[in-house]
Length: 154
Image (cartoon, rainbow, N blue to C red; front, side, top):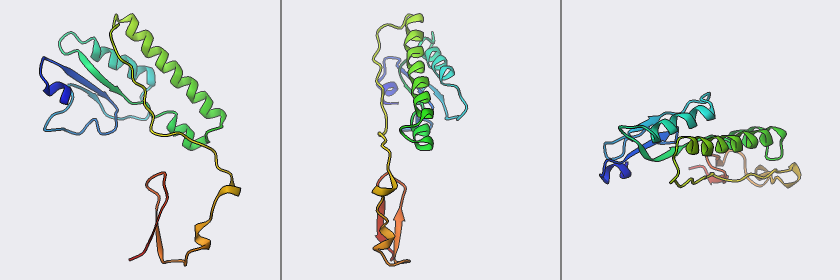
């Protein structure tokens, strides 16, 4: 949105990026697609390429969200065959994106790849059961983040 508000006929696109469908200072990006679990990765790439090459409102900044390998890592674990297969799929999607940019004569671009966190496996021998040290019913757990929060009940 800030990109678009800067003027010079700039346009942006948000492909399933978390929060991308909320208005900022009363505006939404020119191009946008809300999240859908079953929307194929390559179809997402095809859509953002259309935004970038759009003759009337070409996007000069695009955010493309792919929920993997996070979802598979949480579901199957960091050392799983399923996660390795998902990593290959994500690698293939990035290669498809780069090929699509080249095939559509988009040569001057910056590609920034982000992730939200890493993963490691945990064995039961390394788990600390905090309930052994706390009186039942006197505390609350906050598990909304990767960091466990324990606080006394009020």
